[in-house]
Amino acid sequence: MLKMIIGFLIVAACTIIGANYSDIQKKREEFFFCLSDFNARLIMNLAYKKENVKRILEEEKYVHFKEIYEKGQSGRTENLFPKYLSDEQKKIVSEYFLNVGKGATKAEEEFLDYQGKIISEQLEICKAERIKNKNIGEKLGFSVGLVVFILIL
Image (cartoon, rainbow, N blue to C red; front, side, top):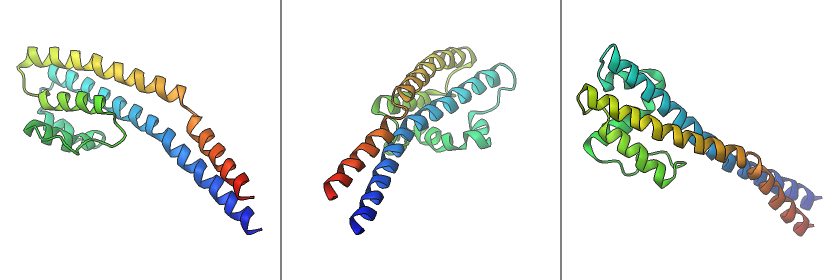
């Protein structure tokens, strides 16, 4: 009886671990969606209000980019990005926040348009990965848990 309870707990734990692995893909997609929204907001701002980038970062939905921006302006970006981003994605975000808000109006507009395309590409890559690996984490976790459960019995 104790083996059965331990086995069920192991299956549940492995399934949860697998589901958390699948959440990484979703978090990446949400990060780049929010970054794309921020970039679009900067483009609109550049055309009409011409507010400071720091002022826009104080809005509630962009506040998590504030620390990345402030440290990016000083060039210190190590250990600053979410752990779920790949090294290539960290490099893209680092370059973005290192250069945003530094150019004249025309140069800034060209920079934001170019970076918007890169961010959109990353967003599409993240969407494709999430769709491809949608349930694989849960299924693998459940399978490993079942194997351990069978070995316990």
